[in-house]
Length: 141
Image 1: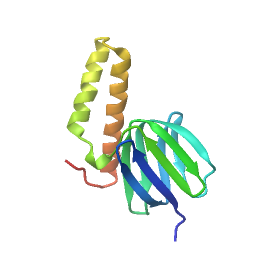
Image 2: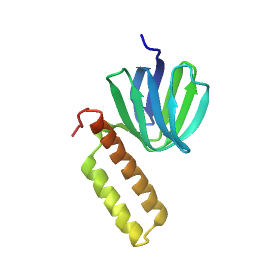
Image 3: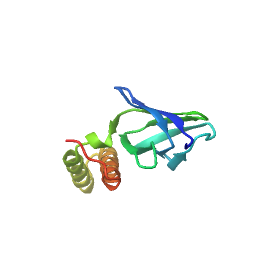
């Protein structure tokens, strides 16, 4: 039996996941962080991106988070997200439109900061959708 760690993924709106996992990978501000059972304590800020939870050798859950905090304790990993969604529930068409609109606005030099934030979030959502596709899971909507 593989070693596991308890994982909670919560946003301000809801709890998205609570259970055991073999590994967690999250998009921290300085890059991707891989967490295995028994990992040293860690507190990291998350940027828009993915949280991948390897439940077993054949099962993975992928979540999109807009940002937040990752807390790691030896037996528990907690993701506190500003906004989070199961990648299977993301609207790919809306994310593509948001990214294209942000790129157009950026090219026209309109509201650089807001445009950049929209571009980062839309791209992160599309990457989460792509990861889900590559793992063979079905997309919602």
